[in-house]
Amino acid sequence: MFKKWKIKINWRKIFQITLWNLLGAAFLVSMGFTEQRRNEIKCNEVVININYDMGHNFVDKADIEQIISNKFGNVTEKNLNGINISLLESLIDNNPFVLNAEVFSTIDGKLIVEVKQRNPVVRIINAFNESFYIDEQGVFMPLSDKYSAQVPVANGNILNKEAEQKIREEKERADSSYHANAIEKVFTMADFIRHNEFWNAQVEQIYINAEGEIELVPRV
Image (cartoon, rainbow, N blue to C red; front, side, top):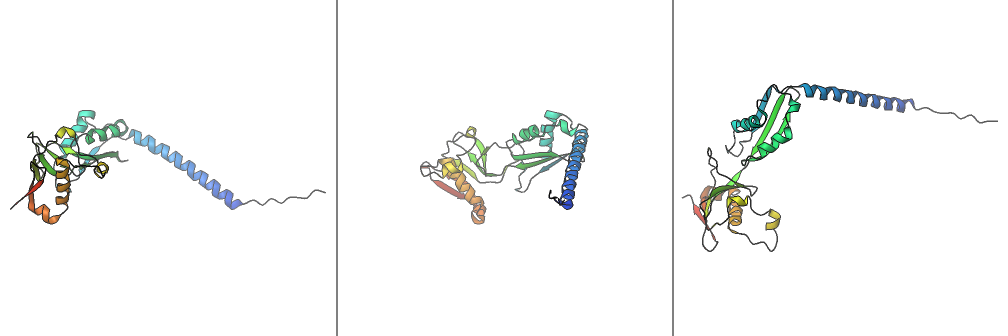
């Protein structure tokens, strides 16, 4: 005589699995329609946002518009998917006054460009009469034809040139065998000054004498 097995079906679990499968399928279909729609969206506006938090005006909207125009022409009424966003970000990042650029598009046809400017902490006039800035990242910046940053000026016995592009990395400067050269001493001092309210209000010039020592010239 055979024993009858009684199978208990968990209808609740089956319903949950079916529901999640239906939701997943609906999501994929929705994404497909959304992607198709995005491919058909035309750019109707370019929105450029530049940070002026530090009070610098190295870059303005006209500069960014020129970069866009030089590579892509008039992007208005072009399909958004025809604009290479990664390439555009790279082109804007190549501007020596730009720290970082982010570009993205919206579903309503806007091309958004977010630009963060570099923040110089000192202006260098070296022994070769070259003049350039160093930003807070330690990167060398050229002077601007349209804007002059109000930062301390450093001169004297500084042999580093703008072509060197930046000072040594922080991890290199933290090494026990590290020996700071003149421009690194200037950068360290300038960075200290800008973070100190009293010294920032007092110091106008940083001078490196023949012995490599730092002399501070006050505003008054």
